[in-house]
Amino acid sequence: MSAADPVGEVDPTEAQALAARGALLLDVREPAEWAAGHIPGAVHLPLAAVDPAAVPTDRVVVAVCRSGRRSAEAARLLAAAGRDVRNLAGGMQAWAAQGGAVVRDDGTPGSVA
Image (cartoon, rainbow, N blue to C red; front, side, top):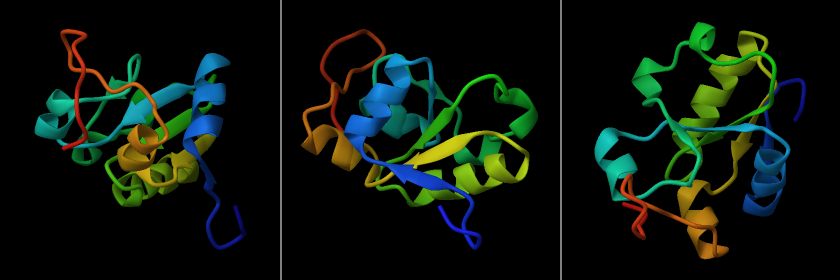
């Protein structure tokens, strides 16, 4: 986090720890990407639909996408609206590479599309 970019990044291990303490994992990928596989317990809200007013103010938000670029955009938008937000560095690719669970809506194993 810097003055130029008010959003901090977290790695998958830090994201898991934040989620365990109640952080909201906000997946901003497109519907087909979400359907292929997502983090259990994450909330889906495509980037184009991100509205800071619809995002809780009482907990940390970890923005998630495939590689970390779209989620960084969402995180900056949320930070500008006063949300306590982090970006998942490397996105779902990093999450899956570090052994993080990826599931489909029916609970079966998913993949990172």
